[in-house]
Length: 141
Image (cartoon, rainbow, N blue to C red; front, side):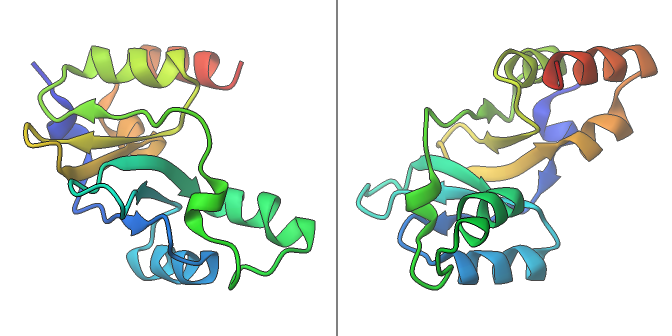
C-alpha cells in the first residue's frame, strides 16, 4: 500500500498566522515551494489554520494594492484547512484533493505534527497516467 508519507515532499515548514506576507514570500523562495501551511500561534499545539500560496499573495494582496509587509498570512486564510494523515492510502489522498479541488495537501503524523506536503508534482511522480488524468479532471473542473 502506498501512503501519503511515501509520496509527500518531506520537511514542510509552518508560517505563523502573524507572519507578514513579504516574509512568507521570502520563506517560499528559500524553501523553493509555492505554498506554506499557516499555524495559529494562539493554539498551544500550533494547529493549522490554513495554507497560503504564492498566487494568494499576488492576487489577494499585491494586485489589490495592499502592502505585503502589513498584511499577515492569517489575513489570507479562509475556509476549513484540509490535511491528511501520513498513514493514509494514496486513494484517500486523491479523494481529499479531488473532493475539495485542492492542489497541495499538508501531511501530519500521529501527533498532529506537520511532516510534509503533497503537491501536484508529487502526484505526477507516483501515479499512473490514468490516475493523474482523473485527478486533473476533478481538480480543474
